[in-house]
Image 1 (tube, rainbow, N blue to C red):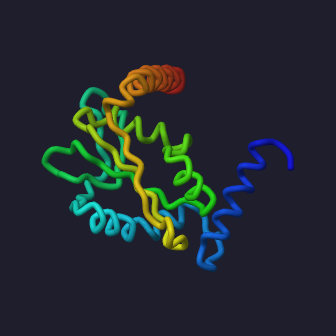
Image 2: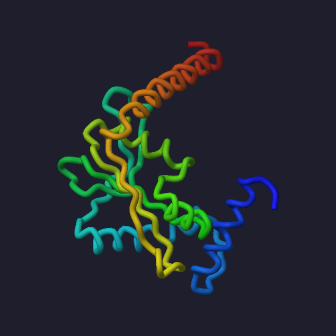
Length: 175
Protein backbone atom coordinates (compact mmCIF):
# COMPACT_ATOMS: atom_id res chain seq x y z
CA UNK A 1 0.00 0.00 0.00
CA UNK A 2 2.99 2.32 0.18
CA UNK A 3 4.30 4.48 2.98
CA UNK A 4 2.76 4.75 6.43
CA UNK A 5 1.74 8.33 5.61
CA UNK A 6 -0.10 7.22 2.45
CA UNK A 7 -1.75 4.38 4.35
CA UNK A 8 -2.83 6.75 7.14
CA UNK A 9 -4.26 9.22 4.62
CA UNK A 10 -6.36 6.52 2.95
CA UNK A 11 -7.36 5.12 6.33
CA UNK A 12 -8.87 8.43 7.49
CA UNK A 13 -10.40 9.19 4.09
CA UNK A 14 -12.20 5.84 4.02
CA UNK A 15 -13.31 6.24 7.65
CA UNK A 16 -14.70 9.68 6.82
CA UNK A 17 -16.54 8.34 3.76
CA UNK A 18 -18.18 5.63 5.84
CA UNK A 19 -19.12 8.03 8.65
CA UNK A 20 -20.50 10.76 6.37
CA UNK A 21 -24.15 11.03 5.54
CA UNK A 22 -23.88 11.12 1.76
CA UNK A 23 -22.49 14.64 1.35
CA UNK A 24 -19.45 14.80 -0.93
CA UNK A 25 -16.25 16.29 0.49
CA UNK A 26 -15.45 18.56 -2.46
CA UNK A 27 -15.69 21.93 -0.67
CA UNK A 28 -12.41 23.55 0.38
CA UNK A 29 -11.68 23.63 4.10
CA UNK A 30 -11.55 27.44 3.96
CA UNK A 31 -15.00 27.73 2.33
CA UNK A 32 -16.45 25.13 4.68
CA UNK A 33 -14.96 26.95 7.68
CA UNK A 34 -16.43 30.31 6.65
CA UNK A 35 -19.82 28.74 5.97
CA UNK A 36 -20.01 26.62 9.13
CA UNK A 37 -18.29 28.84 11.71
CA UNK A 38 -21.49 30.50 13.01
CA UNK A 39 -23.18 27.08 13.27
CA UNK A 40 -20.15 25.62 15.07
CA UNK A 41 -20.05 28.57 17.50
CA UNK A 42 -23.76 28.07 18.27
CA UNK A 43 -23.16 24.35 18.82
CA UNK A 44 -20.34 25.14 21.27
CA UNK A 45 -22.59 27.55 23.17
CA UNK A 46 -25.37 24.95 23.35
CA UNK A 47 -23.21 22.01 24.38
CA UNK A 48 -20.81 23.83 26.70
CA UNK A 49 -23.46 26.20 28.08
CA UNK A 50 -21.17 29.18 27.53
CA UNK A 51 -21.90 32.38 25.63
CA UNK A 52 -19.26 33.26 23.05
CA UNK A 53 -18.32 36.84 22.27
CA UNK A 54 -16.55 37.67 19.01
CA UNK A 55 -13.73 40.15 19.49
CA UNK A 56 -11.74 40.21 16.25
CA UNK A 57 -8.02 40.89 15.90
CA UNK A 58 -5.97 41.21 19.09
CA UNK A 59 -2.47 42.66 19.29
CA UNK A 60 0.22 41.71 21.77
CA UNK A 61 0.76 44.41 24.40
CA UNK A 62 4.55 44.33 23.90
CA UNK A 63 4.67 44.11 20.11
CA UNK A 64 2.06 45.59 17.79
CA UNK A 65 3.17 43.23 15.00
CA UNK A 66 2.22 40.12 16.97
CA UNK A 67 -1.46 39.43 16.65
CA UNK A 68 -4.15 36.76 16.54
CA UNK A 69 -7.82 36.42 15.67
CA UNK A 70 -9.55 33.89 17.90
CA UNK A 71 -13.01 32.78 16.85
CA UNK A 72 -14.44 33.96 20.15
CA UNK A 73 -14.03 34.40 23.87
CA UNK A 74 -16.07 32.95 26.69
CA UNK A 75 -15.71 36.10 28.80
CA UNK A 76 -15.24 39.49 27.11
CA UNK A 77 -14.06 41.17 30.32
CA UNK A 78 -11.37 38.66 31.27
CA UNK A 79 -10.28 37.19 27.88
CA UNK A 80 -8.84 34.09 29.57
CA UNK A 81 -10.81 31.44 27.63
CA UNK A 82 -10.95 31.46 23.82
CA UNK A 83 -12.17 29.16 21.09
CA UNK A 84 -10.71 28.32 17.70
CA UNK A 85 -13.16 26.67 15.30
CA UNK A 86 -12.06 24.09 12.73
CA UNK A 87 -14.36 22.69 10.04
CA UNK A 88 -11.89 20.39 8.33
CA UNK A 89 -12.06 17.88 5.52
CA UNK A 90 -13.82 14.72 6.58
CA UNK A 91 -10.56 12.76 6.81
CA UNK A 92 -8.84 15.41 8.92
CA UNK A 93 -11.88 15.75 11.18
CA UNK A 94 -11.88 12.01 11.83
CA UNK A 95 -8.11 11.97 12.37
CA UNK A 96 -8.30 14.77 14.96
CA UNK A 97 -11.09 12.90 16.72
CA UNK A 98 -9.24 9.56 16.73
CA UNK A 99 -5.90 11.06 17.81
CA UNK A 100 -7.44 13.57 20.24
CA UNK A 101 -4.72 16.06 19.34
CA UNK A 102 -4.79 19.44 17.70
CA UNK A 103 -3.56 18.76 14.15
CA UNK A 104 0.10 19.74 13.85
CA UNK A 105 -0.63 22.38 11.20
CA UNK A 106 -2.93 24.22 13.66
CA UNK A 107 -0.86 23.78 16.82
CA UNK A 108 1.27 26.92 16.15
CA UNK A 109 -1.96 28.90 15.71
CA UNK A 110 -2.97 27.82 19.21
CA UNK A 111 0.41 28.75 20.67
CA UNK A 112 0.18 32.14 18.92
CA UNK A 113 -3.08 32.81 20.79
CA UNK A 114 -1.23 32.34 24.10
CA UNK A 115 1.69 34.52 22.99
CA UNK A 116 -0.55 37.38 21.88
CA UNK A 117 -2.92 37.27 24.84
CA UNK A 118 -0.94 36.78 28.03
CA UNK A 119 -4.19 36.50 30.03
CA UNK A 120 -5.31 33.46 28.02
CA UNK A 121 -5.40 30.32 30.17
CA UNK A 122 -7.58 28.03 28.05
CA UNK A 123 -8.07 27.59 24.32
CA UNK A 124 -10.72 25.18 23.08
CA UNK A 125 -10.27 23.93 19.54
CA UNK A 126 -13.81 23.26 18.35
CA UNK A 127 -14.11 20.65 15.60
CA UNK A 128 -17.39 20.61 13.71
CA UNK A 129 -18.59 18.58 10.75
CA UNK A 130 -22.37 18.06 10.50
CA UNK A 131 -21.82 15.46 7.74
CA UNK A 132 -20.75 13.02 10.48
CA UNK A 133 -23.58 12.60 12.96
CA UNK A 134 -21.60 10.22 15.19
CA UNK A 135 -18.77 12.70 15.71
CA UNK A 136 -20.10 15.98 14.33
CA UNK A 137 -18.79 17.99 17.29
CA UNK A 138 -15.90 17.64 19.71
CA UNK A 139 -13.34 19.87 21.40
CA UNK A 140 -9.68 19.53 22.20
CA UNK A 141 -8.46 21.81 24.96
CA UNK A 142 -5.10 23.52 25.23
CA UNK A 143 -4.15 24.91 28.63
CA UNK A 144 -1.38 27.48 29.03
CA UNK A 145 0.20 25.54 31.89
CA UNK A 146 0.64 22.50 29.61
CA UNK A 147 2.30 24.36 26.72
CA UNK A 148 4.53 26.89 28.52
CA UNK A 149 7.74 25.52 26.96
CA UNK A 150 6.27 25.80 23.47
CA UNK A 151 5.01 29.33 24.16
CA UNK A 152 8.51 30.41 25.19
CA UNK A 153 10.16 28.70 22.20
CA UNK A 154 7.63 30.04 19.67
CA UNK A 155 7.92 33.55 21.17
CA UNK A 156 11.69 33.48 20.61
CA UNK A 157 11.13 32.36 17.01
CA UNK A 158 8.46 35.02 16.47
CA UNK A 159 10.76 37.74 17.78
CA UNK A 160 13.60 36.56 15.52
CA UNK A 161 11.25 36.42 12.56
CA UNK A 162 10.02 39.98 13.19
CA UNK A 163 13.64 41.17 13.50
CA UNK A 164 14.35 39.63 10.09
CA UNK A 165 11.34 41.49 8.68
CA UNK A 166 12.66 44.76 10.16
CA UNK A 167 16.09 44.15 8.61
CA UNK A 168 14.57 43.38 5.22
CA UNK A 169 12.47 46.54 5.41
CA UNK A 170 15.61 48.60 6.18
CA UNK A 171 17.32 47.32 3.06
CA UNK A 172 14.26 48.06 0.94
CA UNK A 173 13.26 51.51 2.20
CA UNK A 174 16.74 52.65 3.34
CA UNK A 175 15.76 53.71 6.86
